[in-house]
Image 1 (cartoon, rainbow, N blue to C red):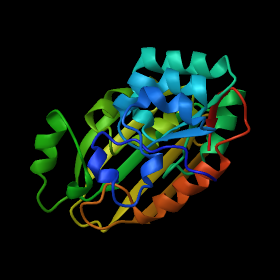
Image 2: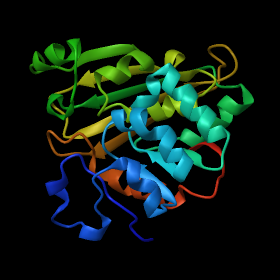
Image 3: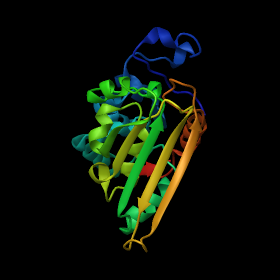
Length: 248
């Protein structure tokens, strides 16, 4: 791989470790660098302002898929990626079983999906009412939110990219029907992600799968240690699938 460019809103933060010839100060200049793949690991607002332009230039891997909780933006990018020639890639991150869930969505057999994320209170970066709820957590676990992933994404844009990836994989349910639960637990020294899948049938004979993923994480870290390796694996497979939206 060759590094085509790096952009950061604060240019001097790139002066150590980034080759000077790779630094750009304007995202509208990216076409001149002829990238094959553009990777966003900044903020959901980047996809909102530049996502369509990125797809005109190269394949685009969106590291902050919470941006797509906005209906209009999701539609625009799906349409853009679907018309080719470049694809929109969504890294699975801490989302376990994404390909299987997408297969169920494609066949129409996915009937329900809930993602529960449990972290130490200091590992959350929240906005709105969730800030006060999280600040008031003492010794016992507290459920900060339990409901639609679409409503949660703007309240925790840095924490629930896993849930956004799940909503994109479970496209027959989407951001409204996929459920998200956020739990602040002061006893944790890891990030826990529980994935509950419901398929065809009725209880007690309904198809179901539940996975629990424990990712070691230092107190206060938004991202667990295993997620870096997962993201790099996503980078390596984010190519060659053509137009459309792809999990990677």
